[in-house]
Amino acid sequence: MPIRLKPSRGKLQAFNTQLRFYYEQFKSKFGVEPWRVLFSDCDGTLADTMPLHWRAWQVVTARQPIAASRSSLLRIGRHSVPRYLKMLGAEQGISLDPLVVAREKEAEYLPLISQVGAY
Image (cartoon, rainbow, N blue to C red; front, side, top):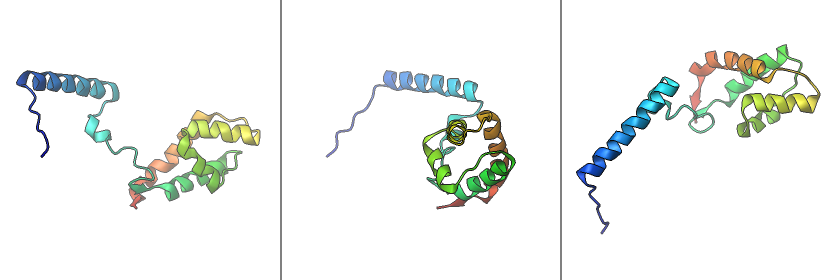
């Protein structure tokens, strides 16, 4: 039989106060309530977004002097988009602004979100 612990009223109040503090800190820093971002990073876990990311990359790489294959795109899972672009540029000997290209890619991807399918 599991042991049930019943925290004192004072400990619950202290916990609630601390929770409220962190909630307000999060909300003021990020401008959203914490539970609204709980599933914000579900790419490849809950949602099949890779085909849409690939479409966005194809549009962006057609405008940029970089070549990105589907297999090289899979490496991005371990890195941020700007870091991936920096690595890709170094590998190909290309000078590019990773932040600008990352914004371009995001601008291409965001309109496609409504087409995301679940796994």
